[in-house]
Image (tube, rainbow, N blue to C red; front, top):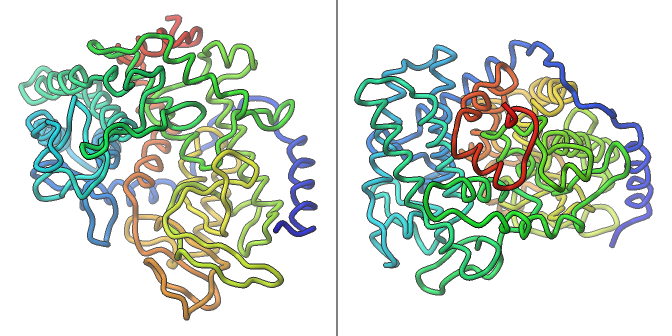
Length: 471
């Protein structure tokens, strides 16, 4: 039951919203040396943990893990960034990329529940790291396939050489993309289904806005085969009226977990281009993510739930690891905690706050609001030090309020003074950190993907105009 403090803090949050910056942050402040170290360590995560034979990236490390196809898409995006920064040779990056593409092109497809990697061009969310086949009873995932294919299309644009290796990279990426039967995943409905199980069929819920599913529709609309009708974008946008939050300069399409404002933006430059909904709103999706980033920071500063460690510089709620699925008494109320879960500011769609913060929520928002992200990274590093910042950069998450040493936890460790800290890194949280630092520095991923026919076609078919699409 919300306390009076909750309502007072929420009122303070609303008041702070009125003071948000009114214009898009166009400047790119120079990054302090810490960001060089974050990027280098985060790249090393992919370099050291990704399987060299098939190119499969683990879902997490160091805990034993299956492959995440989404993390593999981020690994494919990491290799050219490593080349540009001098951390990997172009030859090594091309070899790793080709190994991945060959695996996914040749991996078995079919409607069987075992011994396959995908079906109808889509791939299973998780794969066995050794066999590359479906892991457990996971779903054939539309969004995770989109994240994987986005990495492939980035590789296809970036590796533009005429040698046999880079030529094959481009060829296989296009073949894998063209094979996906996006219309089949609609299951006779306007919306793309979230997934499919061979045992039970399509997941009932479809992808509707606003969240990371935007990437699915852009890729599906731009596909050379099995492309969706442009009406699918209108279906995706139909739920927007329920997602708007804030007023005036803070008004934006809300989605609690910050990754929903980041994932599509890793590969697509939304600056200055608008669809029907954004033209009506008078902003673009980049500005929408900027406002969402500020919302996260204001929420942490107001701290309506009264969690330890939140401040104007230490903030960030997204999908991430948490300490445990447990309920504990905290003052005059019972507090719910979760292990892995989506998290976001209370009051936003999919909002849930149990005091667990994730560095990726702030740091991967760097291009949107560097003026608040740079201080956030510095504060995370300064305040939490080696408890949070280790071999591959920031571990996935931490919870300064969870100090119960007698509670069985999912993973990580509990410090009775400083709270719970994860000991794992997650590929889907590491990837956006590395890519968005690169986009902030010099548009590396964005400028490469602006050359992609698939992206440009998908955007135009969704009704986007202006900006770089006009060129």
